[in-house]
Amino acid sequence: MRISETSLGGLCLVEADEVQDERGGFVRTFCAASFIENGLELPVCQFSISKNTRRYTLRGMHFQASPAAEIKLVRCISGAIFDVAIDLREDSPTFRQWFGVELNEENNKALYIPEGFAHGFLTLRDHSHVAYQMNVPYQPEFARAVRWNDRAFKVDWPFKPEVMSSKDQLINDFTW
Image 1: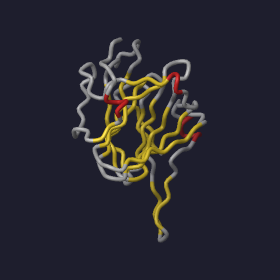
Image 2: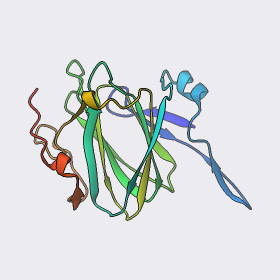
Image 3: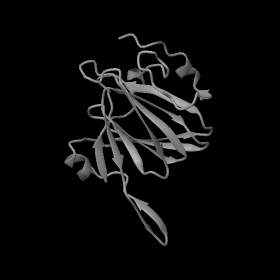
Image 4: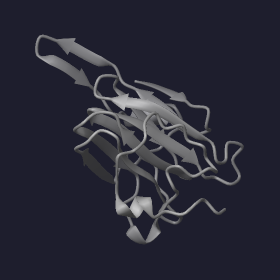
């Protein structure tokens, strides 16, 4: 398992190796010791899967506010997504900057998203499934979001979304 920091402090790309034999493949997707060695924490308390039927489905940009701010490890287990994290930490030198990466079932990559980041993705294939590990349980009263195409962030999405929840469509511009 290789863990490398991205251009946004604390946001890391996690790459796992696949072992192949006559039965197929095996990938270790999480190793607490590797995370600790790299100064990351992720005491997993919740695991969720997002099922997305159509390509160009957009989910995001979501986060939980304090005191329920969460750490996430996000991986695409089937299909492909363009995964995006936006730094919302006001005291960060990369405040309002974003990072995007393709996660798919072939590349064995995951994105480690620390507290203080909004997260979302755009599916690139039909039937894309996304697995999330979180360090705190979802608490709807602390759920927040920023608009996926807010001019404050200038995220360069590879395609225009075709499917989005009505809730995500109603999010206003970033006002901090």
